Image (cartoon, rainbow over all chains, first blue to last red; front, side, top):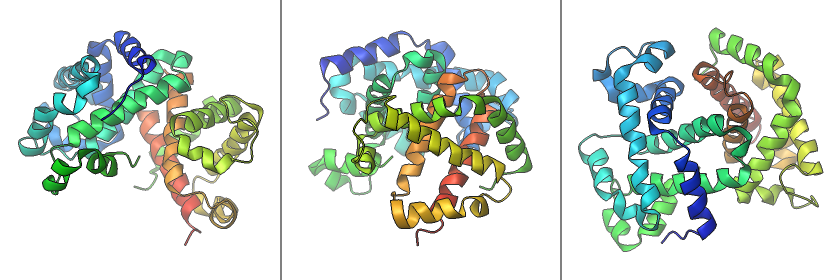
Length: 168
Length: 143
């Protein structure tokens, strides 16, 4: 199981407490669609995503960015049990939305960069390390219900997740 | 994923804005890499001080940024421009190429920290592509 020190828990709460989901969510999702344009494949019904300006001004992108980032709140509030917290969201993304789980890592990286831009130098290397550990666990949890080797996963979830998601 | 004319123009323009702080960028990126990805410390076991902003970290950060500047100047043929650096990394340093992605990520984080307004999404995608191209060029001579 993932262990968090008290310092790590308070770092994550402090960072998240300063994040405005309504601002950061749209910025992060928009940036994903611009920097990794193949991710637009999931948003065919969103209208105009043809240019960076169109993406950043698209109300459906903004609304969806808020939903996606809002879901991180569950992880912040349940740090001791992120795997269970995201079980059904992972299943939904795997079996209904058919989202490649590599996208979770991509979103996590972009979100880190957006938060770094917001916080500036106060996003210290140590805070970045704790934040990225938190992102790794969230990404692993979101990917947890995808695996072909579901039997191996049931028997040794930590190893399976570590192999799959901790390679960045 | 080759660099388009638009990417090259964006990289050169953005680099011109940030080059003045190259040493700070290199120092901060390297510092973050060593803290956030502790496995990278294995390449620097010969340094006395691996803490963020230490003298060897600052000096080496500057060296790395020199390589990035060279890549910007060679942007029309990065492989040719970085040939001897690739040989250095392949035969002497033997840094696992996976680490180029890790350092690139930390460079992007530092660009966001230091230049939140200039490092907009268009600059981000161009720099991400450029740093990936630099990583590929450095890996060329490995095998």
